[in-house]
Amino acid sequence: GLPSYLIDIEGVGIAALFKEQANGSTKVSLRTTAPYDAAAICARYGGGGHVRAAGCSLDMGVEDAVREMVPTLERAFAEQA
Image (cartoon, rainbow, N blue to C red; front, top):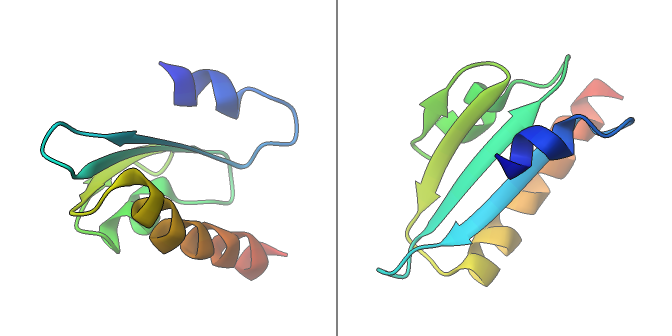
């Protein structure tokens, strides 16, 4: 749903949705446009999917998950610059 809408915004290369689960973990859904690889990013966290849509779960609350994953997303941008 929402990540798919976010990736349609002009200029967006990676859209991430962080959702804290009842057990305290956080589910992350990624959508990307070329040249970014959602599956490769999520694989770093034990997740998977497709090059344009992938997901993973982190055993931490949403605030910690954002602090953990946003630098990875920033590195993905920097590597393509």
